[in-house]
Image 1 (cartoon, helix red, strand yellow):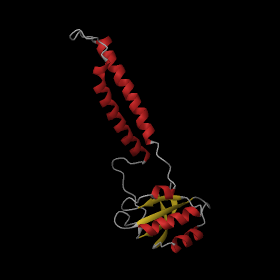
Image 2 (image 1 turned 60 degrees about the vertical axis):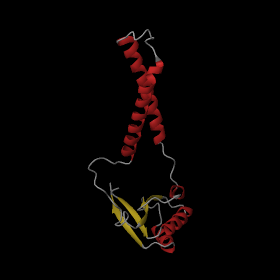
Image 3 (image 1 turned 180 degrees about the vertical axis):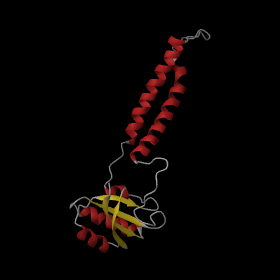
Image 4 (image 1 turned 30 degrees about the horizontal axis):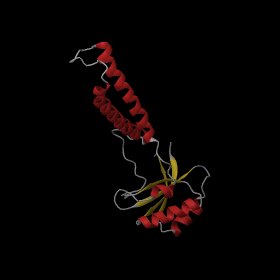
Length: 174
């Protein structure tokens, strides 16, 4: 599905931040911001919510911990009990290293997989840049047009007043 966007480019991060503040103050919803490097504080200006990825890691890590403990208990006590120096079969302290490693491994893999799934990144995906130069020296602010939800003329005026170099209307599939 193709969408319509209003894309404003900037050559200075300060002008971009100023334009973002003005656009947000006028109740426009920012679709995305592209920058060649991270800009401190931009997530608060855009209004990005906190991520839920730590919850994925917590749930998978807790599941891995439970599975590792139960698996080791089953193997050491029920499936193949061995008498090692008169120690009890259920030696929980011996299970800690494997449990820790399984928790960290599966928690890390799950957060990477959840991020790639959420960002729709997969092997072989072709890059889709909304405007040329955003990976080199251009900053871009993107507003998405959904039916008549934004006043393009007013948005163009605000962006031009706040230092936008080029303002384009694009149709893309992002």
